[in-house]
Each structure stands twice: as structure tokens, then as C-alpha cells.
Length: 281
Ligand code: AMP
Figure (cartoon, protein in one colour):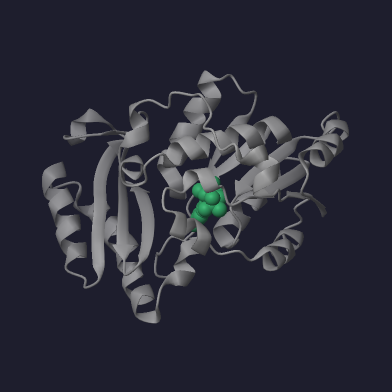
């Protein structure tokens, strides 16, 4: 696996490759787990060269303590990427991606999806996400880029950005990889104490159960049931639970508004913030 930290070096390498190879790209913030590696696997099936990036993007963190504490496990990540037969790792510094400390956001109007759910609780988060994904897509210029459904709102926003800015890349969505008890894999799961880790499994369990209740509960009733079930767990706080229509990512009030409803949740468990979502169809 080739490892680059400078934009001009990775660009030069990819320029020659791009003529004959199909390039698949997976942007990450590192601390890699099976969820990330499933994206690499999917890329390996479709592309002839797979590029992964590791960059903890400061502009998508509204909470600076969260940024400082974000897990960094580069050596372990390199091993995991090599075992997954990743071809190229791009791991730039903050100075490389935001030269001169200029952390200006991309001038792109995300629209109403920016400020709901994740956007409501993480101010400017998606501005930072579109900024870095745009920059990375301009550098790597992949044929396909792979994103996890785990971050469903992010996936929708990136799809929309690529469509509106006419960036020539196919966006591929990959299913959420879960632990045995259903907990969605996340780099943040390592923050959970053993007791919190046990409770964390109940988030997905409740979402899966919600899916079975869809046939006989209204949206309002279902939302109340999910929130009350989870709020009963000590040290767990629901930040939001919302049911959206998947095509536009708009909260819905009645089941007949869409055939593709998705339940999205964010909780705080002790000091750790966890998100998850499931399709309700
Ligand atoms: P992150 O490093 O958290 O920025 O994630 C990088 C990519 O991996 C994003 O497209 C995420 O949606 C995806 N991802 C993270 N966790 C999972 C998971 N459990 N299953 C599938 N994809 C995931």
C-alpha cells in the first residue's frame, strides 16, 4: 500500500493510474473498524484501485474538546488497510488541507436538510463535511466514492452536493455494520464504559422493535414509544428521534406520506454521543 500525506504526491500518482484504472475512494476519519473496512471491501469489488483517506476534519467539529479527544490509531489503521488490500492511503495534515490555517467553508448552500436532526445538534457540522468531502473529491477524482448508511443524513447531503455541483463521481451507499447485539459500529464506541456498552445495544434493539410496531402505531405514538423506552435507561438521553422520508430527508407526520420511511436517532450515553438509523420498510 502506498501512503501519501501531500496533495501533489497523491495527485501525481493518481494522474497516471486514472487512465487505465477505476478508482474507488473511501473518506474516513480513521480509528478504523469493520464498518469502514466493509466500505473498502465494497470498493474492491467495483474498482481496480482503492484509495482511503484518513483525516480528522477540524471544521466539522463544533465542539473542540470532541475534536481533541477523537481517537487516533494510525499505526493500527495502516495494518487494517493493508489486510483489506487497500492500494493507497492519503493521510494529510490539517495544514495540507487548510493551508495557512484558512478554515473557510465551501460556498455551497446545503438547504433545509443542513439544520435538522444532526445539523440542529451539531452547528455547522455539515458545512465542514461538505467542505472536506469536496476538497478530497477534487484531489482524488475517484470514479466511485463509498459512504456508510450509518451517517444517513451525511450521505443524503453528499449525494445532493455531487448532483448540484455536477462532480463526476458515483456515490455508493453501504449498509450499516453492527456488533452482535445490534450496536452500530462507530469509532466512538471505545469511549463507552462496560456498563454503558451493555446499554448501548438497546438503541438498535429499540429501533428494530419500532419497525415491527409500524403496522399498528401512528408516527406520533411510535415516536413516544421509542423516546420513552430509551429515556427509561439511566444515563441515556435521547437528543432526537425522528422519522423522515428517505428521498428528501424530511420529517413526516403520517405513514402514507412515503413508502420509504427511515427512523433516525441520536443519544447521549454518559459522555458519548451515538447515532443510528434504520429503514422502516
Ligand atoms: P467516519 O470515519 O466516522 O467519518 O466514517 C467514514 C465512513 O465510514 C462514513 O461514510 C461512515 O458512514 C462509514 N461508517 C462508519 N461507521 C459505519 C458502520 N458501522 N457501517 C458502515 N459504514 C460506516
